[in-house]
Length: 422
Image (cartoon, rainbow, N blue to C red; front, side):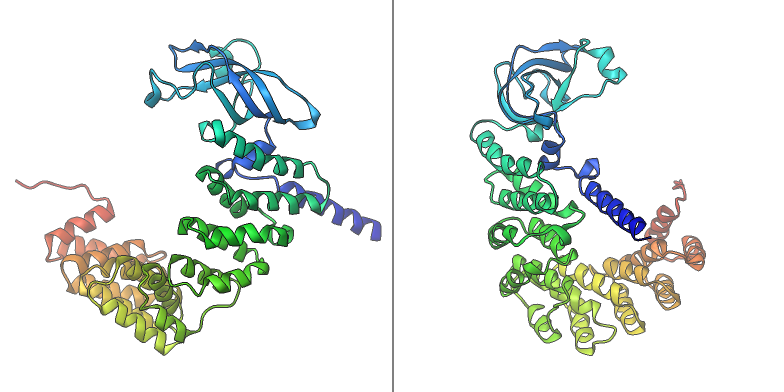
């Protein structure tokens, strides 16, 4: 029995290791492409052979500087295929004499290539021209990929520690594509919580403290916090003191790690000069509104205020939609009924909450109001899942509503053909 259990555990471990490399094609990064490449290095393009009236170019090419190839092989020549997009007609991105650094893949032997190209092995840049680097960029990318590719040949847990460390170092690249792909690598890494090593922390801290786009920082922090990488907590705690988009990203990460800000601080942050911080505080207060009277009072105030930033309004509505409860439904219904910029997000939140109280509120607004309020209510009813009565109300108001614009809008929701009356 012990032997069976041991073998089962070892099999599960191997599956977990294999899963670490299984990344959906749409999520593959420069690092994934390099790891699975036929070769990685600098190639020089010779005179292209045009096919299909120049829509496909096949460049006889030579690898002038090989960085890496699997299994110790040393490929030197290849036939690089490039499908020229219509936007590059007459001036393709690749020309005779070009030297580019890239991961190279071997193209499959399917009928398309057999029908259109010479009968020889064919290659392409893995991931497309996004990963073709020239000049100083080529030198930099080669230096960043070298430790990553070396790590992929290590054995045991050390492999995963070192791959994550090398990708973390790539966050400091001067090249936007490389930085973006480093973030995405962390976002899709399946065993981040298990394999993260503290040696990766300094470059991550530097990246989060710098001027990277907030959405990229948010993706990285979300990946680390979701994986419960608690080593990032001191960094997030320090960044959370900032009154800007980065501070909001850090606070969201701390929420994920179970260290959310108290309501008193959120009330202050909801009046921040930073829209991103306002939105964070508003959403979080909204999510607490079912059980926190102070939070409910503040989000009600935000929704009722004129000129509130749309991003903040949307954040409040999202948070309230997560909270639910009759008091929250009442606040959202009042926002829908006002017929202003808060109506649509509030109606969407009600649709997300669902249930008889939310259904009744939207139906009443649709019947009693006109203009934006009625259309928002109709949109909410149209989005409400598992609500048979909602369709009945929409069909009824498509025929009976006093506002012709609302009737037309409901018709669009229901897919009713527009009939022009003369």
